[in-house]
Amino acid sequence: MTDRIDAREFAIEIARIAEANRCEDVVVQDLRGVSEVCDFFVICTGTSDRQMRTVIDHVGERARLLGHRRFGLSGYDDAYWILADYVDVVLHVFTASARSYYDLDLLWGDVEQVEGWQDERPGE
Picture (tube, rainbow, N blue to C red):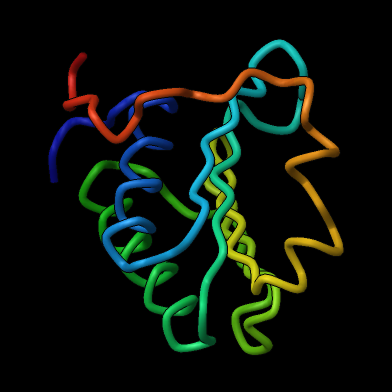
């Protein structure tokens, strides 16, 4: 196990996993100072239930290596909206229709997005 990384780095790592597994429209939202629930949302759209579950599984494996424990998982069986709660970071993997319907991007539209996360390297 490596040293535990901070919430921002972990959110970026999750986003990279989602992107590497071909999720679409991957967004990292910075909720620090806005939400008492968590510090970051990672929101993405999956194209199949199998892909969505794969992202959740890969994030879970990587989280354990990085010292983050998942405290909640919802929607895994239905794969319409899968939510993985790592306390400081919450991952939302939606189908396209679920993402459009719940529209977390608009609901939390006034929060800052982490820009350029695709280019950041760990420790930056």
